[in-house]
Length: 125
Image 1 (cartoon, one colour):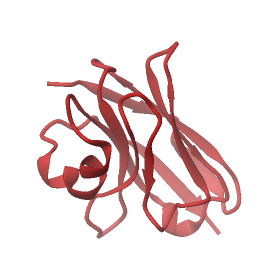
Image 2 (tube, helix red, strand yellow; image 1 turned 135 degrees about the vertical axis):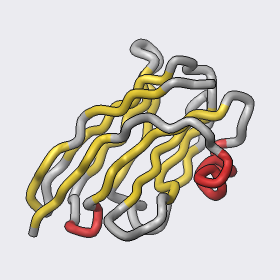
Image 3 (cartoon, helix red, strand yellow; image 1 turned 135 degrees about the horizontal axis):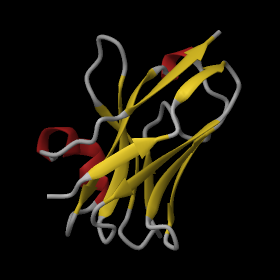
């Protein structure tokens, strides 16, 4: 079971940027970011393959968010630019050893059985 710790959340104004970090106990895995807004279901928004050469983005964040892997620090990152009030949510990362990054984002919310505590992002207009 992969243990995860997210950090980097905060309260910002619309148009500003934040970078989230996730440190998994096992780095050699497909990984991704999920979020759960108030009254909404958790959804996958950005996922990356084990070797970092393939990514997937939800339409809601495409062009504004960038997922990447820092191999030296064994950390998953999410650079979030041009934040909007609708980005307000608790953000979680997930990792799947031997899994496929695209499946992680599309159906991982129903398959991942271990989540970190998350990090809150609040965007005000």
